[in-house]
Image (cartoon, rainbow, N blue to C red):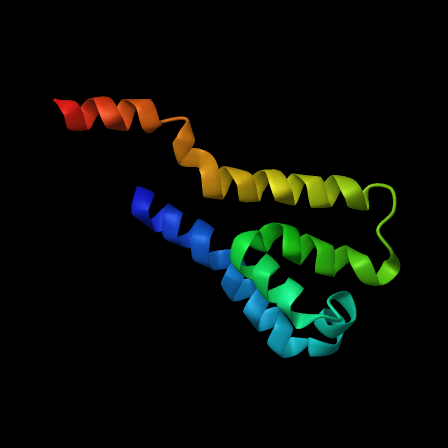
Amino acid sequence: MCCLFLVAALLGPRFLGFIWWLADPVRWGTTFPEPLFGLVGWLVVPWTTLAYVFTLPGGVVGLDWVLIAAALVVDLGTNGGGVFNRDRRVEWRDR
């Protein structure tokens, strides 16, 4: 069950971003005039990239920053969540 959650957390936002890009490439092109930035964001911080694409056409103001910050926290938790349990994993391997 844990592995299924991990796969969904890692691949879910990337798949959603890819489908959204296929459905509305103009919005993505407007958000990221340089496609390299969109690609790197899609690979490294996908939730933040999705939140940014969602909020940018109307301008990022007010509570939009809260949405982007929350997406960044989710990305950091997904990418770096193993840091908190690293000590337990190292002890387990040493036994």
